[in-house]
Image (tube, rainbow, N blue to C red; front, top):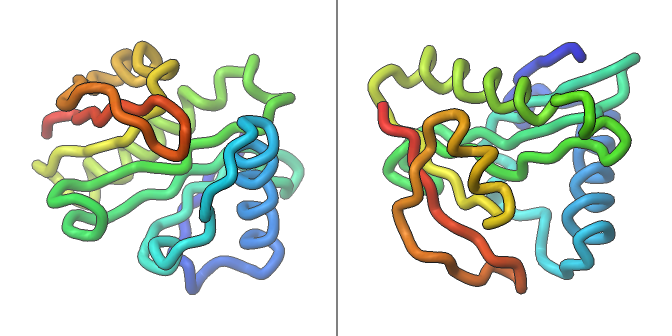
Length: 147
């Protein structure tokens, strides 16, 4: 897996297409959840892409402080279904956290995690900071990784 991070303006049309296709396949079709995936936040995000043979297999959306939360943030964390047993979710998160720690040293990271992935995020040091809440019909929990 080869990782790269780009701002929205740096994305090629093919990369943007692959990102939106992957997010649709997993978050809307696989999870059977109708929601507005394309939002104005994409324009202000860093886009972390994991590619194999120039095809995006893993992705996360990364935010500077004061865009979604006072802290930094990671969202839309997704790995193509066929690649999940290869632990790409773990390496994807490691790259995202490292990027934010280097770019915004001393700033915590907040995520809105699907509840069933709580233990996965705890492995990186994230801690739950709110009770479970419903987001688009899926139980979520807000978590923080202290700086």
